[in-house]
Length: 172
Image (cartoon, helix red, strand yellow):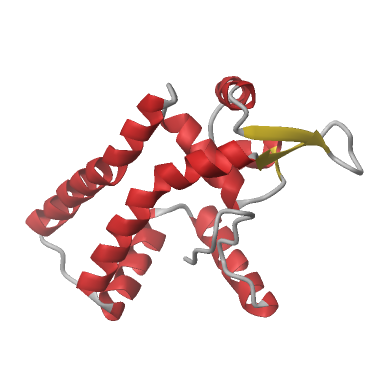
């Protein structure tokens, strides 16, 4: 496939605009709670991965321990997440959204889900599949393998790819 410079530049520009618009409403919700985008990512992925460990979240978000520690302390203090020790290894801390955390996470993603659903409906199934392939091509090989493993596991168990405890269901 031959790609022209202007096509690549247009794609980059569209990604910048899409990212801006995708986060716009969520930023307003975050501001109301005096939270930042790192808090949003933590709430989202804790909701997506019930009982994820702190070390698992560190690997997923690729941020420093210090940064995550501050974010988690804020979310615990605001009553949005809870931390419980591991059953086998008491040093591990498992994370879960509280009822308040579920509510805030829903508020943060409501407009994003609607925006994505509208764009998907307008583009059609074939375009959605192509978009998914482009996004998969943009992420690291390790993340791509992890997502595919989750998708395969979901197919085997009949569970949605992105099962979320108490938050609803979504798929890749």
